[in-house]
Amino acid sequence: MDSFSGDATARARRYLRSRDASILLAPARGLHGDVMQSTRSTFLKVFGRREAFELEWRVYRRLRSAGVLAVSGFAVPSLLDADPTLGVLELSRVQPPFVLDFASVTIDQTPEQRWPDEPGRLQASWARAEEAFSAHPPAHWARVVALYEEFGRRFGVWMLDLHPGNIAFADADRSVPCPTPPRKSMGVR
Image (cartoon, rainbow, N blue to C red; front, side):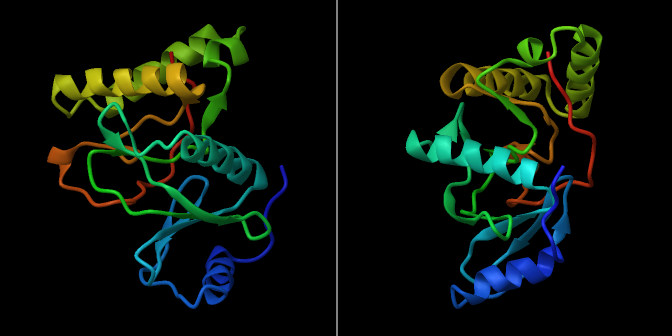
């Protein structure tokens, strides 16, 4: 896998300098990159690996071309700008309920189609996702499943990193994006 060269914060500063802006809040570390707020009231996601950047950028462009602002009642950040040489996505701010982080997805094929010889892996991943939401009301898990299915059916995007840091509910009283500590990506169902 090809990595971006240079420190993520330095790349974010370079990106923002060309737009007469700066970093407002220090970076939060995520699995695929750092997330930071800009003085433009936007969020930057600065990736470590090109593959993750390309995948997430592809999903956000697909959602933007379809005019998507929300899916199954969950707000989706809008792609405002990107710099593929720096590995930076600039995204709008959203409030709960929201869904974000599309660096761990399959596109145009279900996880079962992508990994047909690994049903145990997919079942275990789905169980981990369900466990991640076990402290939530049962209705939340049903909404997560509906969200997963609608993304796949409408956009050909199958999310693999389902957890409360990426899917937040309004009653969780969280602001966006606020990544959780890194965790392994998961194939689901």
